[in-house]
Length: 433
Image 1: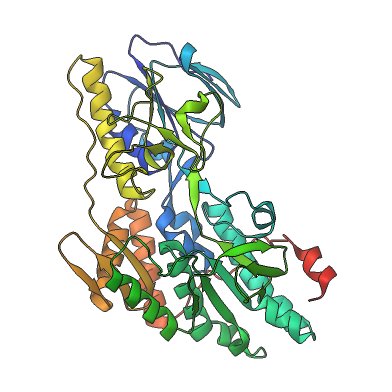
Image 2: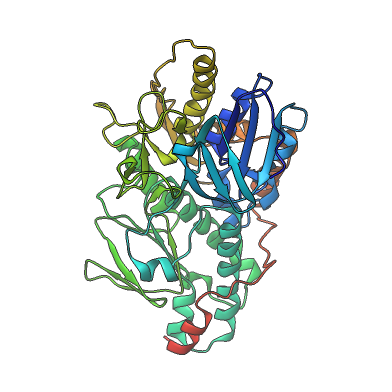
């Protein structure tokens, strides 16, 4: 891997997401050698992936080069690679570009989509956890309308224009709202010879409320916003199967659809090599103590979505969101420095700063520790927080200008099929619906 030998302790960080980046920033300019490994050379601002998927933002406006963030930091090294195995007892890792020894290892691999063992849904549904996946969704949405123009089969056309979003969390709610706005103000102008009124947007939630985890008021208001936008909200309905053409549920309602977007759950993205008792099987998260240390290993830590720090307050661990990941990354950096200097480490305590979701133009819900509000003011708060959280002045400027332009013109300029997406094309044509 061409990492030079040094007298400084070597800290290896696997993953350049919110947690890994926060840890790396906390360790920079210290008497350490920091090695960051990721299979992408950029950090993704995941909360805005849905805007890439619906043509509201360019993909490079929510990504930032990892090397650029640390290009003036001594003793910092980035390697573009995939970690294949952790040999914790030997203090080493195996990667796609070679092996590397460490003094401290931080696992910050984040999460991946959880299909709960349903192989059909995993095969035929769309995921939205990365920029390439968001671009796939964008291409598929637009390709569906191009195909709908060409078919004379009404049932097939309806299926091409019927969108199923599974999961009523922030991702599903925000995506449904964005699609509804496309239906209202953009697609009728792009496809004047297609009856866009046939387009259906279905949001399916297995429990009795959307935005579970937020306040009841936020949940109810978000549902009202979605219904006003024309989204069909299905509650207490669970998707059991999807074969590429038909969505099967646990109720009497089944859906013919060419596009199912799965936003119903995530699980930790673990790496081979850790002992089985370290992993919580269903959630695929690594058990850690209050210092984010994996109890079975002295020099291995896990932070962010992949880590499960259970307690009486949080028996299932902290929420798999950006804020816990960032806070764990920052504190772990301080604790590693403290441990190296033989000082006392500080246990992690999550500072819940609140949660929020946007449902479209002038519509959002915000739950802060002391205040809860909805509507246009919440929408401005949501925009400010997300804009401020982006990395890099260029990204902030581009996103801000895009939002201003989209708001004034009621448009989304990046509805482009840059690379056609062919998944399930043969299945749809074969079945003819």
